Image (cartoon, rainbow, N blue to C red):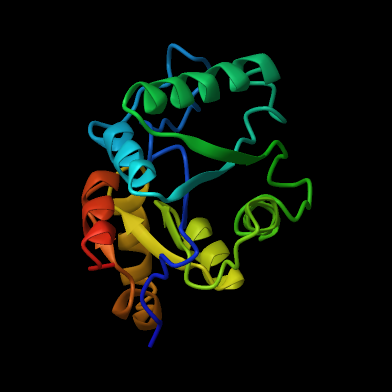
Length: 194
């Protein structure tokens, strides 16, 4: 049985698309297309104000595919940071993979390099650190680094749950906390119900 989340490291890692902002199968390509999921910005700010260091780990293969530019990505991330800041919170770090699926990199989740980079730069042990995601690759990256995977039903979350059920992956489901969205996951974490 997996141990519960460890907040003593005082950090939390979040996936971006489908967890913080609305996702799209055609990719989020600009600052204006970047739309927060209701309650997500406030949830990040709440966690930050409670003393947790917020890091984001996100695959952004749209760069490799030519769907958006570095400037576009920076604009989306600045919008996210600005919205959180306006609520009194702070995103300390954003780690992203710019590669495509066929590039063979270690940073594309379920690879572990993004999470390892976060651990190194924030000087935190990833063991038990909550990682909130919406995809199987998020869950796999969390487990591979010893982080504590949490699934939200937003974004690809419902599809992920269906895949896990179809695989009858009882290990993945029996000890996997699943929440409606980031706001409800944040509430549970702040009340030690992870």
